[in-house]
Length: 179
Ligand code: SF4
Image (cartoon, rainbow, N blue to C red; front, top):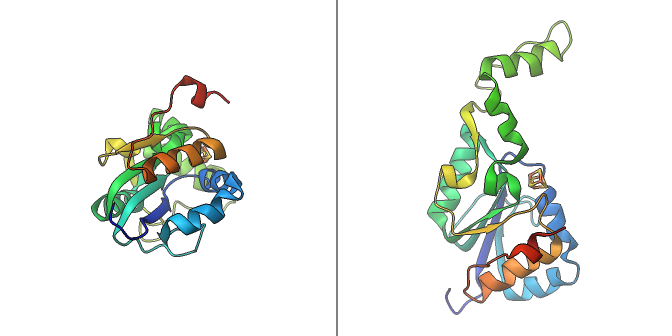
């Protein structure tokens, strides 16, 4: 990382934003972090979603539609260190339950069977097209660091960010992964 403040971007794909919410629990570390890094984009921290060149790119959520693939690839192209943040990003998480069914049946059940009598499956131009399978981030792009948990605790997030800012890849042993 250069002499200037490292730049950080975060993005949410198919996730619940819980990992980002947990980040906000790092309390006063947010203030320290604001001194240490420059947030380039983040839908939660600054409501800027256009990912630019950064040192650290952090992705929350599963890759489950073509829009998520685009966000993941854009983050990969624009960052030096890419972090999978939370169980959805690291392992696929709860979204991968849909891998046991057929996409057409799932869309039908969600939009038609659970909707009212006029409900239809929306056209592809109204909702992003689902990928064949819901995937962890590293099934689509290279990941450099993993910070698991659902959500990762504020303590783990802080530890991970501190290590990354020291130029190290965080290693999370069993003690750090116990909740
Ligand atoms: S890992 Fe958990 S908290 Fe984070 S996006 Fe997935 S479901 Fe939400």
